[in-house]
Picture 1 (cartoon, rainbow, N blue to C red):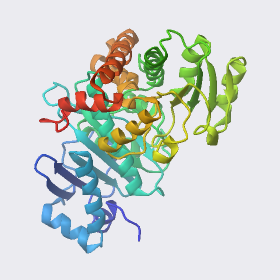
Picture 2: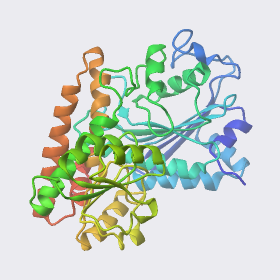
Picture 3: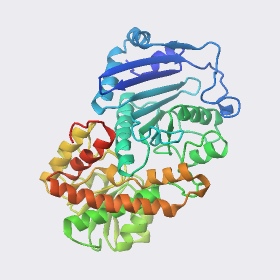
Picture 4: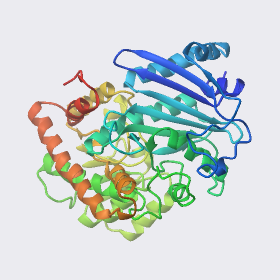
Amino acid sequence: MEKSLFIPLDKENLTTLFIYYNWRKDLVALRSAREWEGGTNWSRYGEDFTFEGALTNNSLYLGNKETWNIFKKYDLADYLDEVIDLLRKGRHQGIECFYNKENDVHFISNMHSNVLGINNGYHAIRSGGIRRHEPEEDELGVIIDGLNLSRAMSFKNAGAQIPFGGSKITVQCRPLDLKDFMTIGFLAYALDRTRSFTGPDMGFSPELADVMRREGYSMNIAGGFDSKIGPTGAPTAYGVYLAIKEAVRFKFGKESLKEMSIVVQGTGAVGYPLVEKYLANEGAMIFVSDTRKEPVAELAKRFPRNVKEIDSKDIYTFDADIFAPCAIGGIIDEEHSKGLKYSIVMGAANNQLKATSEEEEIRLSKELAKRDILFQVSWMHNTGGVIAGMEEYINREQADIKNVMSHTEKVCREGVRENLYSSKKEGLTPTERAYKYYGSKIYPSYENS
């Protein structure tokens, strides 16, 4: 049987589901509701109604016990428990689900923390990207991905000195037509209700941000082509480059990447400019892996002396100084870690270790350390994008890329340097030290401090 949080919503003609978790007291609160009817003209969001406005006279609100009973009715109580256990494991604040039945849009806001965002003076109290998944994907896998990324965002924002908590929005729907204002209006409505600001991630074009802002749907999205900052891949690449430089200085005592061998996995929004603007210009020997052949071929043509292609299956056994994962997450598990021949793993991909909690990440980082591999959890240095998003969100028309770059240097150069040398002094892995230091800012009475 298919398992989904949206089945009871579909069967009972409901639109929203809220699962809130208090990790301090291990309390769970459920709410479900019917807040709109079929035929709602989402293209008029922001014109005819706002995210606080009533959308139907036939509204219905169900509490904790009633919502539990609906899941029991459809034999999904165990699945609901499984999702709640994930919240418990990651100390998340909850998830919020918004269902557009007519367009088959499943919108989930994965909320990790609002601690850094409380009383910050802005509409949004959390920030994190919005990514699209295909409707056929396993929902639990999508939720795990969203929760992992939302937890990483809490720490990323803390490390980047950004006054917002962490979240991640996952949407299961068909590829989006940027002229489909019914769906775009719905996404904007749900986004505004989550009290988050976001930026397009995997599966959504940066143009989504441009359309939402230009058409007046929501200002709580950044990272479009039309902004003064532009897409966030470039500043993210700059931050990763600075972190790699710090890692090389720490590990090898070298000031340059000249003749260092580097494997870059992924040549997308971050991996491509990382190679093009930074690594190739330092004279590093770069080996690029991607399922898409066009950008790899383009880089090899532009830099024939120091960019070569390798097969994706070879990244776990390739012999090089540095591995920079810049594609999907969860690529290094305990088994893969045993075959790695790199001295440094430092890339842009989120959640590079296959883990669902910080405890698991710390354990795997210790396994890498045993093999003398320098690894730092990615939220310490893939922060250029969120820094750019904050600059655009807060300063609007006065946003300046110079502010982004100087802030990124502070975080990804000075911050990484401090973390690497402090971890050595304290006898911890860089990942362990990062969680210890920034965890005290996110979790009151942090257990590992």
